[in-house]
Structures are given as C-alpha cells and as structure tokens.
Length: 600
Image 1 (cartoon, rainbow, N blue to C red):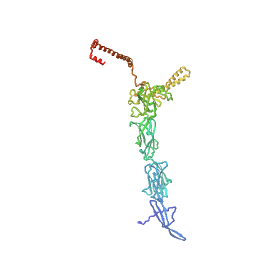
Image 2: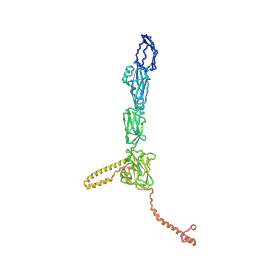
Image 3: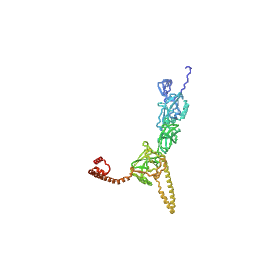
Image 4: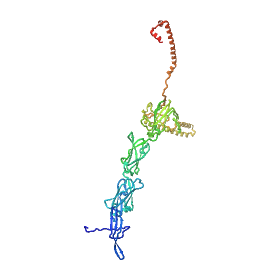
C-alpha cells in the first residue's frame, strides 16, 4: 500500500480426490499448527442457469481438507547415519522437503525407527528425534548406537493416516531445492529402508577379555593356549589389528624370575590366540598387554602343574644300611616328572619292600613278584604318608615319607617301587638319624639318573651286539659247524643271563649313591642289629662253677669254728683263765675276753 503496487500472487491448481463444486467469493480458512493444518472452504457464489437465465446462487456448504504435513510434495533423506557409523559416536542424517509449490517446507512431522537385525539379539530399537535446522525445509536427525551390528533405518513423514515413507540416498547432497531432492530420490531408486552398519569403536583395554583354562592352570611340557578378545568401551568385538603381547614370568618365592617365550597370533576377527609352553612347574605371572597397556585383570596368576610321573627320576633317601630292631627308621621317596618337577598330587603308588634275598628279576606279567623274585621279610611294619618331609611344618610336593619298624635282626635289602617299577637311586644318610638334618640330594639324584641311563644304554647296546652275533652264529651253525654251534650255545647263555626287565629302572643289584656327589658308593651290606646285645657270660660261668665250692667251705667253717671255740671255752672255765692264757703264750685282755664270752 505504501508503494501503491500490489504483488502478484502465483496460484497453482491442485488436483484432489474430492474437489468442491466450482464457486467464487468463497471463504478459505487455513488452521495451521506446525504443519498439522486443516483447510476450510466455505460459502461462496455459484452461477446457476435456469432455462434461459443465469443467476448467482449463494452456497452454504463447507469443505474440510486435512493437509499433509506440510503439503509435502517430496522429501528425501541423505547422510552418513543412513549407511555406516561407529558405535557410541553420534552421527547425522538430513531430510530435505519441498511443498506442492516446489518450495522448501518447514513444519514437517517425522517418525524415525532404527531397528536391529535378528542376528543381534542384544541390540535395541531406537526412535531418534528429527529437528528443524536454520535452513528452511532442512531437517536433521542426530543419534548414536552403542551396540555394533546391522540395523534398518525407516523414516515416515506425515501424521495419522496421511503418511508417506521417505526415500533418498545416503551420499546425495543435502540441498533443499527441488532438483536436489528429486536427484536424491532418483538415486535412492525408491528405497525407503536404509541399511545401517554400526562398527565397533577403538579397542578399550579395561573391557578387553582374556579367557581360557590355560590362563590360570597348565601342565609342564604341554602346549597351552588362551584367547584375548578385543572390545570397545561398549563391549563390542573389534575387528583386530591391535598390538597384543603376553609375557609369562616365573615367580621364585614372590620375586620375578625367568620369562617364557610366548606367541600371539591375530585371528583377524578381533581375537588373538596366545600360545606358550614351559617345562618348569610352579607359579607364574601372565601379563597381557594391548597397545602397550595392561588389559583388565592383568597380570594373571598361573599355576603350572608337573607332568605325569617319570619313575626314572624318582629317588629315595634316608636310613637304609644301619638299622636296629625296636626303632622306627625313616625313608623319603621323591617323585618327579620327566622335567624334574615335583609331582603336585598324591597320585602315585609307593611300595616298600624289605628283602631277605633279592632275585634276578621279575617275569613280565608276574604281579605277585616281590624283591625282584627274591624273598620278602615279613617281620617289618610300614607306614606311608604323602607331602611330608624332614621339616614337618612344611609341605613337600611329590614326596612320600615311609616309617618302617623291623622286628628281627638280619641282613635286609630295601627296595622301593614307584607305580610297580623299582626305582634306581638310593641315598643312605649314614649315621645322621635326625631327618631335620637331611637335605634332599637333588643334584646327586640327577647324576644318579644319568648314571643309570648310561648303564641301561650300555646294557642295551651290549644286548643288541650279542643278538646280532648270535644271529650270525646261528647262520654258521646251519652249515654243520660244530665249533660254531658250541659258540652259539655260549652266546645264548650269555644273552639269557642279561634279561631286560621293564620294571627295573636302575641296576639289578641295589646300588647306593653318595648324597653329595651322586657317585656310586662301594657296596655295603645292610645290617639290622638287635636292640639288646647278648652279654659276655664267661665270668658268670666261672663263678657258677666255683661259687658252690666256696659256699660249702664257708658253711663248713661256720660249723667247725663255733665248735672249736666252744671247746676252748669249756677248758677255760675248768682250769682258769691264767693257765690257758699262759699255754697260748700271747697277751690277752681278760675283760674283753669275758665280754666276748658273754656275747658269744
């Protein structure tokens, strides 16, 4: 009005399913509440022809049109949140809308759902909110997903029954002009559901998981594994590619010792396999690091158990050679695996044999054989306990204590079976009878084991040579060579005299070794003495013979002397003291004599 110019309004004809009758002068009322509007068309005039005359007729009807929000002609969605995002990180997508006049339109009402695929049971369904931006006709939706997986994003525009799915293309431009919107819709090819891939974030050490029974318990000499699973801060499995390391450190009385080589393999799926093997049983610390930092729970406590028993390495030490009846003597048996580790459970069969004689060996399959086929001393009592050593206040892994009590004296050899096999290393502690003063001869036991191994190897080699020579000799004997046949017989006798007994570890004859050096000691016969030694009775016999004679003489004297003395006294009374004394010719105290007579 101020300029006197009226703007030109552009009108566009819209086709509807139920248009009102044509009219003029109608009243149009638009009630709009953020795009949820209603259009009322009321009253107006209509020209009606009656016969040959035409006259305006006033209309009193009213038409109501529910407006789509907000008369959207087209909406297109685009943005990275419709295709790929990282778990826990907010991401956006945009919606551009134009109305029926191809103009940017605000006031749109949208419903967005983000639903997980069936493969992700723990993934939630999200309903993020769409908000207008500062640009007319442009809307933005920002959301984040914590659980990695595959999702479907659906966008609905409108309200009530007047809704349409929104199509588009995640990589199209976000311009709100109608050409860009149409281009996005064309690129989307009618797609109304968008596939969203949510990837795991960066590996988060506090949430990384280390699992596997070999993480806390293993066996010496056995290849062991545990699994490291990289997770992000939302507990999603990562793709892999991180720097993972694992170090095993032996604990020596609480202090760090040697380290065990460890191999870590990236499985390219977010997991890492750690493999290790150690021959040393004991306590370890397992430090698992990811990108230079400890994972949750690291370092872990690992116990490496001993492998199964190796009888070749078992040994016994204690009192063997000098024993007495009536006393309890002690022998300790230490069991080990093939790596020298002490066994850690009471799983072994230990048997004590006191032998009056030791045979040449037990036949295979003879389970009742004792003392290598010899004779067993039955006058002995034994008691075997596990985990007991010289110091009763400590626990001794793999060690057995044998208390034995001999009832009769004699020469007895002690043999000890470990799992039905005779052990080959015995260490006598000599005259030291106090077990607290004993020390397990570990170094000496290793030397003894090596000694027995070489002895067995030499015997096996000699046997093979003899068998080979016997075979050659037998071939010669077939040529009717009498000399060869006699020689073969001698070889066969020699071969039979050196049987290989699988139940014998050491030498057939019981061999003792020095507990310090481990060298074999000169053979000494074990002797069990009686507690009470028979005394020397020669002097007793002397007195037994002579005592009766002496006693008889004393008895005779006891009879004769009083009789003589009585006779003398009678004479004294008859003839008087003085005459008798004079005849005796030695001085006499008459007062004393009278006293003696009275006493007598």
